Length: 248
Image 1 (spheres, rainbow, N blue to C red):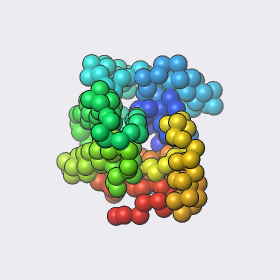
Image 2 (cartoon, rainbow, N blue to C red):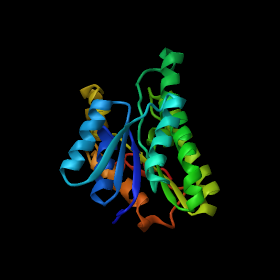
Image 3 (cartoon, one colour):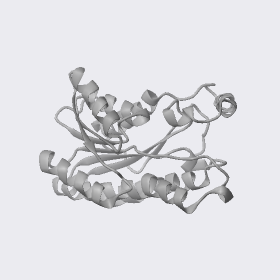
Image 4 (cartoon, rainbow, N blue to C red):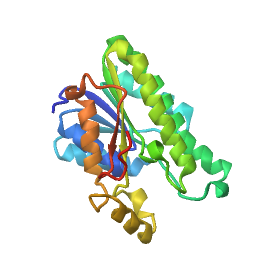
């Protein structure tokens, strides 16, 4: 797969799945914009990629802040013009019973997992439309496909992102812009590290492959959608879950 001379924006690229996605796209030849709210980690990620001979630059963005998203999009497009690949990878969740949730917690998840990706997509899409090309890959979650106990609001935000993907794919097809979605199952990330060990072991037993997924394995699915190998694929939702969820 080759992304030579392509500009790719990856949100949440400072760590976890986003960092692996940034690595895969950079390895394929793309110039990667490492977009994250964590400046230190974002700078370090970009520097690590450059040290390996890849093209990468860090730009700060807070997806929960409309002004920050607008400023980020302006900065990217002022320097690079239309982006070729947008990966909406930033996300966050918190496990708790629905009745114990607070409006503040819900707002954070909704703004980061759903509203933020919509804002950034809308900011970057017009230039893609003008050029009549581009790839958008949204990273949702299998929790948004089948639900997840203790993650009701999180699942709702990811389910919204899945529906957003499908509907946007229909609108953008006339402009030859592909919009697809990758849904990780339980994956070995810093977010998963916060899950109690007992629950993690139970998840492993429920997964047919008997292990957690790796960020690189999710990133491989993103790379597929970002490459022209998938130029006739749009509006699709790909589960990367080791077989934990097999619903269509």
